[in-house]
Image (cartoon, rainbow, N blue to C red; front, side, top):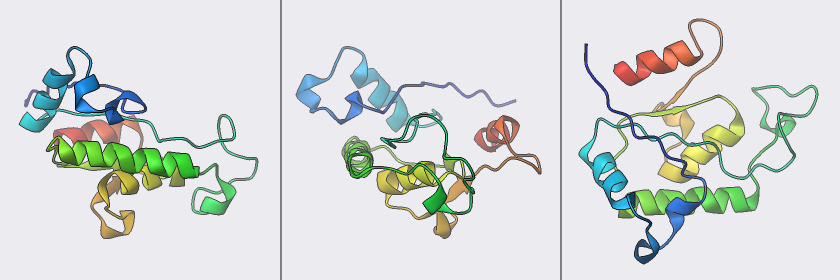
Length: 138
């Protein structure tokens, strides 16, 4: 069985800072991500409106969900620019089906979910956390 070492860090706020402000240990995280065979996890960027989605939301209809704010889109683009500047290559991009998550992935990478390059994990039919684990091992 293949071993995968995981480095998990939140890319929500601090990753967009200038390199001269980098905290202790950050250089090692960047080096590990550049080396490959590591996983970076992040939550979607700013999506105002509290927790969850409005009553009656439909997963296939972004207009019924809590979506990214302009700040959220700008933050995701800034994080994506930093990842690119650090030379981080994406082998696989996995997202939940919520629009705010797919929009964050798109803003980070410039890749549209319609391209098929972003794997969208859905519940049912073997979806959920188990399928994410299988996707990471493939």
